[in-house]
Image 1 (cartoon, helix red, strand yellow):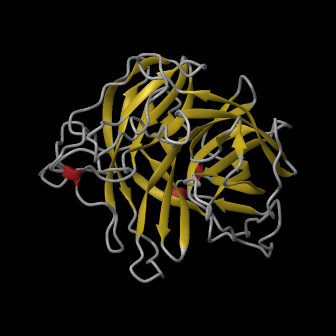
Image 2: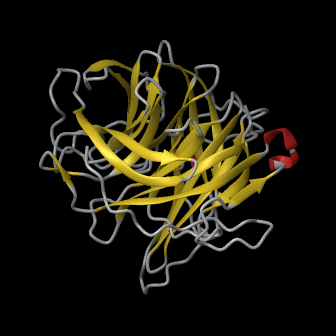
Length: 377
């Protein structure tokens, strides 16, 4: 295992109090999301750690971390890279966090595992786009966004611990990409998010709306992203919900610069409350990272609705409420795409987030850690 230089720590500003932005242990508290005080969510900041772009493990460049999950069997985390088998074969990492109630002191790479296709071979270049990863009862669940331009459909698969193929989930109608863009996923805005509900069902979230469901997020409007609820045991879809992605919160400050906003990951709290990471980028400004809590209770199952914009059916999306804004609490986040609960070395319940550096010299693989004080169970 290798250790890395600890970046300067930054911390959360108390919502009520006078803590400074460099204080480890400062807390943020949302006592009643949606007006529901049983859903209280409270965190205490434990620090930041950075692995710089360009770091290599076994002659393979580390980066592209787009999904993260805690493995209680090993006490380590698994993290998937979104390298499209271009720098090296598609892969996931096993990471060890030097983390306890006093702070986050380091992140070490224990090993890297090559993901295999259905033929037992590493994925060829640009045939896969790994995005999210979760530890399941019978293996490692992971998603690929596919490729809208190349008409490669997204997928969810189960892999063995050695990365070999076990099985694939069914793709609902209307999700496969189309050449004329009348339906299906948008390129690079597809299966970004996975999480297991307490019941064992798997949620799979899109970053933005399918073409038939409306536009991607803009500065003046949001996007209607679908969430697929799967029976994880048989890989068959059981329901679909609508998640209303927020409008882009920040205009680009660079002339002719771009901006976006989408749902980059989900993390279930129980069988109805789920955290959603909304990741926005504005050129010249940087990233805005907000964590929302959604409530599935009462949301309409839209499995039988081909288009959300061409229906007379009354549709109720999931409710959502913001519980954390990383910039608002004094942090400067990079491209956060991964979130997981876990256990620190001393048994402390923690929440960790990680960024996808896009293998860019202007970005970094950034890890944040928080102690979980209160959360729905």
